[in-house]
Image (cartoon, rainbow over all chains, first blue to last red; front, side):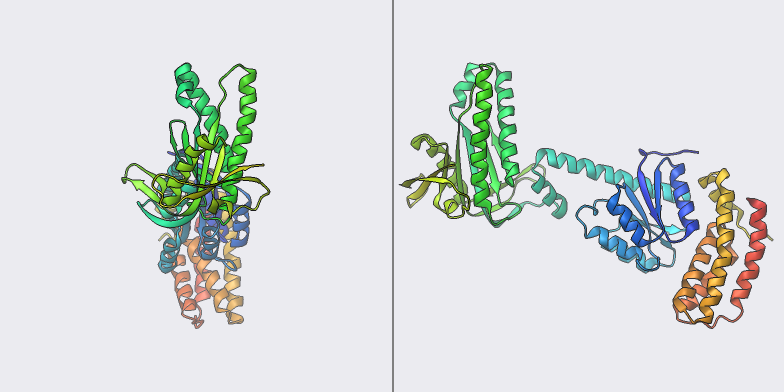
Length: 346
Length: 110
C-alpha cells in the first residue's frame, strides 16, 4: 500500500532502538520516501552534515549524544537549520518535547507511532519545507541574497536603523537617444545584458543592487550586512563595471550594435537603512546625505568627463592601489559646504 | 485472554507491510532477552541509568506490538529508576514471565 500525497523525499531516522528504527523507516518507505537510518546521535549528526535530507525524525532519549543535543547542533548551523526535525518520544517525555519545540524543532510524534499521525506530520513538514524553499528561491530572485537571508532570519518589518555604508549610483549616458534610435525589444535586450554585467560586478564585490529605475541603478555596500571595507569594495566594483563594459562594447562594436557608456558616483557615510513602503509592497533602501550625494556625484561625471567619481570619505577608506585625480571642492544642490571629489582609475 | 492488543498489532502489520511483520517480530524477540539481561546486570551494579534505559526500551517495544501489560510492567520499572529507586523486588522475573507468554503469542501471529 503506497499512499503518499507529497513528492518522494529523503528522510533520516535517528533512533537507538532497533525496533523503532525498523518501524519508522518501513512506515516511511511505504509512503514512498527514501529512508536512511542512524543508531545514535553522533552517527545521525554526521549523516546530516555529509548528506542531504528533506526531513529528520529524531529520538530524544539516546545514550551519549541525546536528540536534544543533535537538534541544538543543527539549529546552530547556518547550513543545517533549514532541515525540519520531528522529535520522536515516549508519551511521558512531554517536558523534553516542549523543550525541543521551544528550541526550534518542527514538530513531534509520540511512540509507538500511529501510522496515520506519522503520515500527517511528515507530509505537513515536507509541505512546509517545500513552501519555505520556494519562498527562499523567490526572495533570491527579487531581492539580493543578503536581503533574502536577513528577511528569512529576522522576519519582515518596516522601519530603519543607522548604518555606515557606501552607496553607488550608475547611469547610462544619453540612454534616451539610444532608446529612441532602436527597436523597443532591442532596447530591453541591451538593458538586460547591461544589468547582467553590472549585477555580477556588484555582487562579486559584496554589494547588492537595491533599485533599478530605467537605465539607472543604486547599489549598497555594507548594508544590510555590515563589513568594514565597504568603501574599498564599492570602488572595486565600480572599476570592474567599467572594465567589463569596455569588453562588452568591443563585442557590441564587432556586431555593429549599440555601445554603452556610464557614469558612476560613490559616496559613503552614515545613513538610515530599512524597508520602506507598505506591508504588502516594500523595498530595502537607504536614506541620508550620502545617498543624495552619491546621486549628485554620479551626475557630476558628465561635468568633469570622468566615468567614476567618489567623495572624500570614500577615498579615505581605500586600501587598493588606484590613480586618484583630485577635482577639488565642488558645490552640490542641497549641500551647504563644497565637497571634495576624486576621479578613480587603475 | 490475549496478551496482545490485536488492533495495535494489525495496524502495525498493515502500515509496515504484511511481508515485513515477521522480520519485525523477530527483531523484538531477539532484542527483549538482551534487555532483560541488561536490567539484571544493571541491578547488580546498581546502575540506575542503565536499568532505566533497558526498561524504557522494553516499554517502547512492547507497546509497539500491542503487548500492553508487558509495556506497563516495564514502564513501572522505568518510573522507579527515574526516581532513583532500584527497590524493584521480583518485578524483573515477572517481566520475564510475561515476555515468555507474549513471545508465544507473537510467534503465532507473525
